[in-house]
Image 1: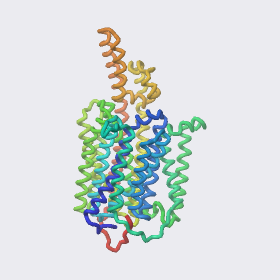
Image 2 (image 1 turned 180 degrees about the vertical axis):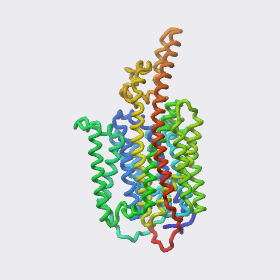
Image 3 (image 1 turned 90 degrees about the vertical axis):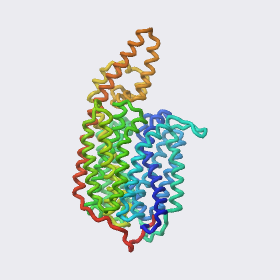
Image 4 (image 1 turned 60 degrees about the vertical axis):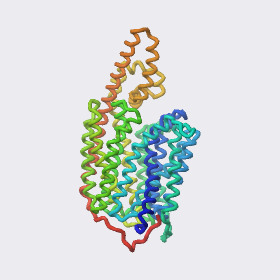
Length: 562
């Protein structure tokens, strides 16, 4: 522990750590805006899923392993390795010459991102006594909130191409921007973070790490974009999607069983099984999983709702999430300050999850007929609830373990939240697709779709009976492109035929938009019902936690290396 450091040193360390964490949080949102341009340039639409999934797999695998390694080798050494990997892989991603190179470097980038994520939250526990951690966990929560808004805005701005200092930006700059900030964070951490020798004998659980990696990687592949990623394999072997998933879940079960067996015997297990004898620890992990599934899995669709219903551009739809982000940042910072003064944290989790549950229930009434004002008000409440609940999860789990186990315990919370998010996103995505599928015949019967059935735009996007294609046809940028092409044709007609044709086209487009937005809204309401149930379950579990006093550092504790 390094509670003895001066406030100046702690501030510099935390600023550098939060800068590196900001890059990781930013990367998750900034890349989303660049995906279209990337696959278009490389003509690799079939590889779109891998750009996201490759990063997700390596990040998820790395988090628990990096958490344990930081307990063994020290936080500073592991964090510097993570920042170096992330910066180097970001640079190489930006200069990739083909889609395979980009996927490879995205996977490497995910390793760096996982290391940073695992250590950033743990370092708070190294620098500050339990009672002080709340305010810093709150600031880290605010960093994530800020990144969720800055990412889409900055990603859109860079991808659209803007000139500065004689250079014109493109999608590659969504990776290049990580380099200078990452280098600065690396320098600050290397200079100001203390480095103490670790007294323990180094034992690495290679078998546990390998089995955990297999279980996590196969699980993610089994639930995330499975059909698109393994399309060629299923075609060549005749396997159905259900059959493939049965095989993959069987591998997950075997790898998990092997992991548990190995961890029982390991001297320094990746994830000590003794933790699971602690009721509070297990409860917090379940809450983190439910939170990840409900919040991250469903809120992603609010941006798409704003684009479908309000016709917002990608940039505008990001700005429309500002009320929620403002709520997250406000409550994260304020609750952290109050926790530091009172030493109480359970009441904040209770209030936070109850507020989030109420807000999620309110989102089930969201419809195309409602104004944005209703959505904005509900997002403020949701943000306030989540801003309180998110940071305290880490605080609660850190308070259950000894200082020497801080890294692995904190990273395990991040792992289960991430897994919840992956599974939630996959399940909700399937729910959305299923809901849209029921309305596909009605959409295909519209004059608008019959007119576009043989157009180049539709051929580029995909099959006309694919729900994703139909949703994309209602996106503002695609509608603008289609309308521009139609207006060129109308301009060749003599008046008043041109105006009549234009009016008929607009009417047919509006008819299609109405069918799409109502189908999307109906599916989204069902998603929010499930999400509200999950958040509600988490709220109930919060009340079962046995709050322990936030303890101060013990002078006799053996300090671990940062």
